[in-house]
Amino acid sequence: MNRTIILLACPLFIAVASPTLAHDDRCDAVAASVADAGFAESVTVTCTDTQAILTSDTYPDHDMMTGIVGTNEQVPVPAEYPAPVLLNPVFSGTPLTRDAALGVAVNGVPIYDYTGGGEMSEADLAHHQAQHDTLQTDQLDVCGGHAGRGDDYHYHVAPTCMIAQMANAGPEAIIGWAFDGFPIYGDTNPDGSTIEGGVLDVCNGQTDDAFGYRYNTSQDAPYIVQCLMGELPNFNDLPRVRPLSAASGGGAQPGRPPQGGVQNLVFTQSADGSRSMDYSFEGEEYYIRYSPAATENCYDYTTKTVTNNGDVMVGEFCR
Image (cartoon, rainbow, N blue to C red):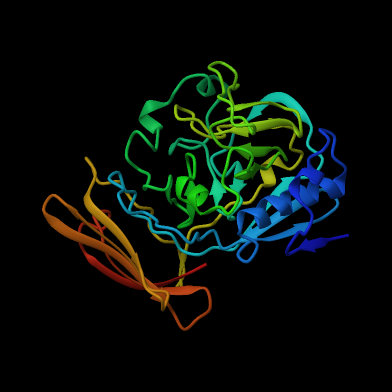
């Protein structure tokens, strides 16, 4: 039986009164985290027998892309994304990693680990991967996210701009959910106390009185969830956002990061749905521009990128 929750009237503390919450209470806790943060109009929460599914277009209502230096020459395009959160989580203590999202923020935007290199081995988890650190290599915008190979926007570190927008912003507010069913909080404990060094485990998590276990963000690497500590029977089936495809057939060429980074990257958005990412590289101006096409879920592109050697490319690409 499915249950769609648009707005939850009961307060969150009822839902989190026990570390062994019943199915409906866990569903309500997920829905409350979205509604209390003020994102119920853009994120739908639907509960099944096993999952709370947060569905959104992964396109947040805050600044995006601006300030990136290490661009991959990809831009964010709305993408319907059903993020599944387990309602009966079981802590295993065995870290799981993948080269895609590990969870979802309460505004519906996927959350990845801090690396741009994808899945890490268990040995990699214990050591900071500086060369793949999206924050230290200037691949992220001022809000902690960027567009990836799927042309979708996602976070790699704490989603600071989203947190600033939250109606219930504060240490006790849940900022997201990992796919294994455990919540994600900010840099402090829910009571506002400091998390002492060495408390967070390799996945950036710790035990929690309400949910049994939780993840936290942190100022230092790994910054946010970098692996999952819960059991996930469907781990290999977790959703991915596929790259755009050319309307004439075939996929879009992946962006190739310009060596040394770009300058003055700015992403602008217009009310008619058109978008433009403009930047300079070695004294020359480049851009990626798109607007909604006549065909649903398709976009008319005009680009001049370093990846394509400065050639102007025009085409229609679709989800």
